[in-house]
Image 1 (cartoon, each protein chain N blue to C red):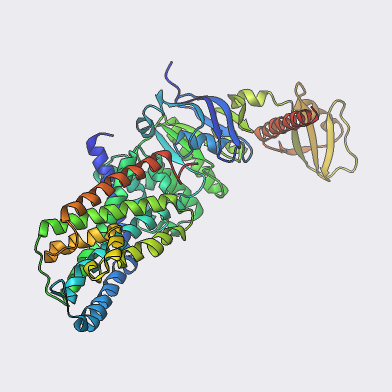
Image 2 (image 1 turned 90 degrees about the vertical axis):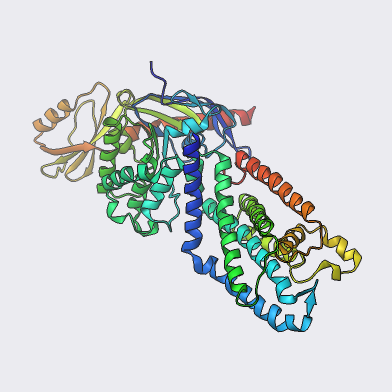
Length: 257
Length: 320
């Protein structure tokens, strides 16, 4: 394929993915908006008013970046995991496999589709948050960069999960038992400076903590950890996981007999 | 001589559980051919075609499509290839037109380039009126035609049809035969067909390979294969019932129904002799047909012979 044909193929796949999740918006776009609105009301307003300030900011202001990031992570991941697995299940993945599209284009198409949903939901949650607080963004470029990188990373994660899954249950195990606990323990609702030093050390092993903190730094200008290290770690994870996913795709893991 | 549309050498496939689905098969399909790949269930047809279109990873061997080695440049080879699989493999919740256009996009065709071609294909296959409906609303026959349209969108030179008319009613099947003949004859598209309807293979294909237990047991022209048929059984419909079975020297005759006889004709015997003898005995024949499709008789005898040989080999190995 020449460069133009490759771009056409990539855009076709991305457009198809975007069309898929917007067609089923009551399942993909609406629920996270409602869930996050509940978080803002219950944790931000009702409970947050009794908690007082955290790291010098109102509790509502403190949790907004984490909640946006949480919705970006879960939606990027689940979009790719469910979409690619459905393609496997319905065998429509064969449409892609018999075509001359290189594997990196197939992988990138699904990643970009997952990012589109993750970032789209993130934008919706951000708009919802404006009904509860006034958002200020200290470092706009950094904020955009980290949210884009995070959505890319979890889209790749969702792709690997879908490749390895043999049944629909397999694509809910990672989000339920790994992603959700790591997100809740990743400093979305609290600052790790509140924890005893041992648990602070344990928390530092949680990759989501780095993403939430850098994102919060972009909004508020405060972070529990060094921003440059966190960005480097996210970038390194993206590179490594991209090549892992590509190697699995080249080997036909889960899709070729 | 032009490169074969498909060339397979020493193709072997061993699945993870140790089952050897293909045992080093060799196969050539010439450009412009209408070729049948036949075999009983589990013989290795779909595995062979799966390797050709990258759905199955081969264990050993070489596959070239129009001279392009798939191990060297599979992407280039795939441009030459259109695939209509045995099972429906599109997203049933998408619109018919979107399924066809998306496939065009995967081959690098822009929407503007693909739309006229998609319209022509969907019109030819009687799906244009359904283009904006969800694919799941189509009947089984329409879904099969949708897969043909999708496979042809990028104008492939080699079309692989894996049981394209399975579950399709006879009228629609015949219209699909006409369409396949047309793209083979008018557009020069090489077609490889697998089917369980042997009259379909006899009617459409010029050359044929029979695969059994992962080995090609025969690879020849349909005409050549049929000349090897040693016996044919004909059913004769009579003008009036007969109470006594007519006897004709050298011919095996049996009564199927009061007014229907079956006659076995061996190679070298002539039907005219049967008609003359019956006429002398006052028996009038009003119509005649083959008891079974000729290719089917040949196919069944070859597969049975192959199975018998394998059973004997297995028994011999067990005894030693």
